[in-house]
Every structure is written in structure tokens, then in C-alpha cells.
Length: 368
Ligand code: SF4
Image 1: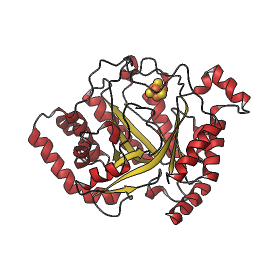
Image 2: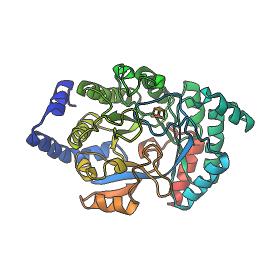
Image 3: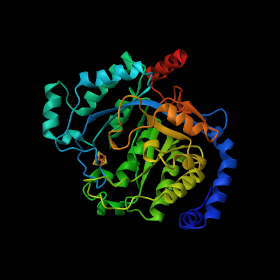
Image 4: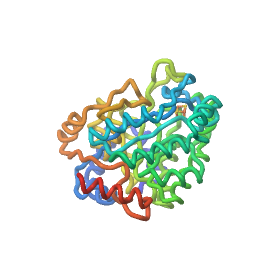
């Protein structure tokens, strides 16, 4: 594995030859990596998950400098609204239901009042209920990403989730003093790392990621990738790492901050591929439309969730490409686009999944 010093040299490098050499070396390693991740039987495949995005509640206790998801005048979806989307997604043969909401929404008394009126003591009970309905009534598998959860909450939700997620974003606590995270108590790296480790202890297949371009130094970026790898080496629970690039959107506190350049994103992907040997590396195709193919050559092997029916509520300005478009996009470079479930193949067993989930997945696979 590349060491810190060489990783820093690569990020600092302005030599096109050096970057191209690394690209070539990675392409030679491609076959081995595909085999290691246990998700691809052959080389030159790239996966995606056909999903439905369910923004359960748009309030959040944090106020991140780059966020466009959080709303003070929030929406809390009713169960009927969520069921409608899930039924629709089922018709489109989606297999992932991405349930997302801001962190610790229970801290908002108005939300608690609404939940109580519906007969729930907290948002986790509400979520469990709709996820259980989803499992019993559709062929979609829940994947929850709703910020920090306690050990007990993770344990409860494991019963109804095929996998779960939390972006690490960056492992540096320095960023908690900057515009990105100064008003976001939940972005303390220590807390996020603890949750990722708890998910490991509970054997929950886990999705995480880094956010690049939010004011981190190159060392902090490298440390974050190594930290994710450390957790995976200890618990084996990290199935994929999303490399997400900061987008300067109108109206956010970081509106005038520079976005990472395509070369910076490319070098981060190369580095991630070198460090995260048996973990999938994912970039959202809607945030990398012009450079997606180049990133494919740099070693990404997953496009993440792509929805035929719902928008990306975190990046509403960036529509998903059509699945056909993504297929063509991948084929042009000799890659086969393959749909995957929200849980990677190597975790589909009784060790990593609650029995109900395991049986449900067997059912889904039989029907495919
Ligand atoms: S934690 Fe997520 S939802 Fe909450 S403000 Fe930050 S980016 Fe937005």
C-alpha cells in the first residue's frame, strides 16, 4: 500500500506524466481489485444501485456551510407519502430505498410533537415502522443514512436495513472551527468514527465517504482515507467509499468557495484506489458529468444510487443521468454496467444480515 509520504507527493504532483503513469498502473491492477471486492466476477465492470430517495425529514441539528438539504421550515413526510414513492419505485424494479434525514431531528420540539401525534416516541420508531412496511410490501431494501446514531439505535435499525451509511467527510477536527462545520456539533470526527466502529461491532455493512474541497489540507485528506481503511481493516464492514466533491451552490454560506478542480478529484480517486484495496470506490455521476469517464479510468468501480423516479435531494440542481446514458457512458470505455443491491455480495450471509433481510434478498435474487 502507498505510504503517507508518497500519497502526499502524488497529491502535490503537477506532473502530467506522473499522473498518467499512476493511471496506467491502476488499470493493470484492475482485475485483481475487482476480484478482491467480491462483487464482480470479472474485470471491467462498474456497478450502480437502482434506488428511490426518501427524504424523511429535512430538518437537522447541524448547519453545515455547504448544505442545501436542511430547511428550518422543514418537511416531515407522512407514511402515506413514503409508501406512495416506495410503491412507484417497486414498479420500476428499484431495489434500494435510501431513507435519509437530518441529524437528531428529535431535538426539534415541533417535530417531536408531530411524531407523538402519530403515535411515535421518536424518529427511530417512525423510521423502523416505515422500513418494516417497505420490507413486507415491496422488493426494495432499506438503507438508512441519517447522521449520528447510537449503538442501540444502530442495533435496532439493523433488523430492517440491508446496509447503513454515514459520511466521515474528513477526520480532522480542525474543520469544526471553520465555515464548513463550525455550527455542526455532529461533524466532530471522533463521534463519526465511533459510529462507524459501532456499525463494525454490530456487523452492519457500511457506506461512508469523504467530502473534498471543504477547506481540508492535503494531509487531512490523506489521513481521512487512511482512517477509513483502518476501520475496515479492524472490522471489515466498509463496503464502499464515496468520493464526493464540494459544489458551490447559490445561497449557501460557502457559495463563493472554490470547488475542487477535476485534477484534484482525479488524484484523490487514484489515491483512494491505492489505499482502499478491497473497498469499492464510488463517485456520484450527477456531480461529475464531464469527467466521469476519466474517473472511471482512475479506478472508481461504482456509480452509487441512481434513481429513475426521485431526484437527488442533497444535490437537487444535479439531475441523475438516465440509466441508459450511464450504460453507454461506461460501455464506451469497455466497462459493463451492472446493477447491484444496496448490500454488496460479500456481505450477503447470516453473519452480516438479520435473518429476515437475508431471506428477503434470496427472494429478490430468485425473481431477478
Ligand atoms: S449534517 Fe447533513 S443535513 Fe445536516 S446540515 Fe450538515 S450536510 Fe446538511
